[in-house]
Image 1 (cartoon, one colour):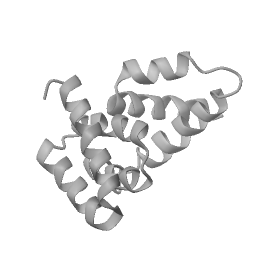
Image 2 (image 1 turned 180 degrees about the vertical axis):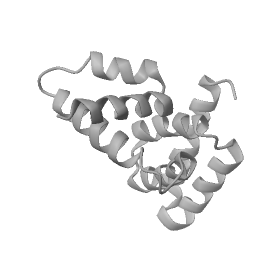
Image 3 (image 1 turned 90 degrees about the horizontal axis):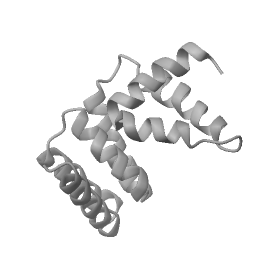
Length: 125
């Protein structure tokens, strides 16, 4: 593991997903899953999210669409919160899910809307 890349990725991960969630993920990691935490933090959150070719808001648009297509509600919940932290509006998030309904399927989009409403309620938006 590259400690510097990990720390940069950790900072970005905290900024997007929230420090409490990220810190709990790291704190609760054990010998079995800590290598995955390190991999995600170093490569996903540093090598990709810290690139300057796309702004974070655009990355959030993409993630919402892809995670909806993959039907991963747990990750979608995290990334709805991250999208809001990155400046997306409820209307923009709705637009992503409507687009996904056509290209990924209505059931996936319905689940995405349900998950987003939970996040909006939690964040009092």
